[in-house]
Length: 205
Image (cartoon, rainbow, N blue to C red):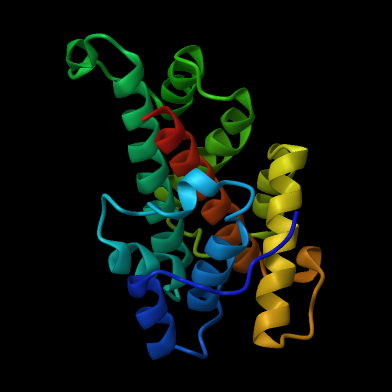
C-alpha cells in the first residue's frame, strides 16, 4: 500500500498548523491521510457529522481519560448509524438497552464486517476500566497491546504504514510502533477504526 503525502482537509490542516509541535495533532492529520488508499471512501468524510475540532482536541488532549471516552463515543455513534441504516424500523429499538458488546454483535448481525468486532469491544472494555476505576489515569502498555492484537492483519498493516509515514514526515527518530508510547499507539488505532467505519458507511450509503 502506497502512502500519500500529507494533504489534509481545511479544518485539519488549519488546526495542525496552529499546533505544530503536538504529536497527537500531527498524528490525526497524517494517519488520516496515510489511510486514504486503504479506505478511499472514508477519507473524504471523516468526522463530517460531528464537531471535528472538538474530536481532535480530545484525541490530542493531555488526558487519557478524555481521549478514551471521546474515542468510544465517536465509535459508538458510527456503529449506531450502521445499525440504523440496516434495519427497516430502527426506531423500534430506541428504548431498548444494549451493552456495548451486544450493540457491536447487533451491528455484525446486520452485516458489519466481523473484523471490526474485537477491536471495537476492546475500546469499550478500556473505556469501562477508566469509568469504573477512579485510580486509572493513563492508557497502559497492555491495553494497547491487547487492542493492537485484536485488529485484523489488514488493519494492522495500515496502522504500521501510517505510523511510519507520521514519523518520517515529522522527523521523529523512533520508527518502531511497538516502542511508541501507549497513548500514541491508541490514537493511531482509533483513527484507523474511524476511517474504516466511515469508508464502510460511505460505500453502503
